[in-house]
Length: 110
Image (cartoon, rainbow, N blue to C red; front, top):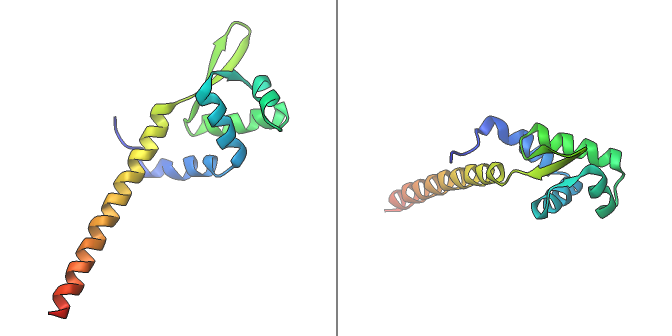
């Protein structure tokens, strides 16, 4: 699997910056749920849940699945993994830069 393109990170982080969206994602990690089911588990109205689900779906973190007459939502773990891999790559690049800076500083001291 590939990392998430850096251009997509801002929308993912914007979506994840909301505590309610984190709670929704946590609940969807346990089971596929409808907006109504989520509203019974969280202290948020069904309408607010629907808006949060739209934000999570827009950045690819959840998908809707038709189950009979109900629409349920599912967290997309692979998309979260892509985001985590991208952050790991960014962290590794910073580590490499810091090592290079340290080596330059140490050679200047000699």
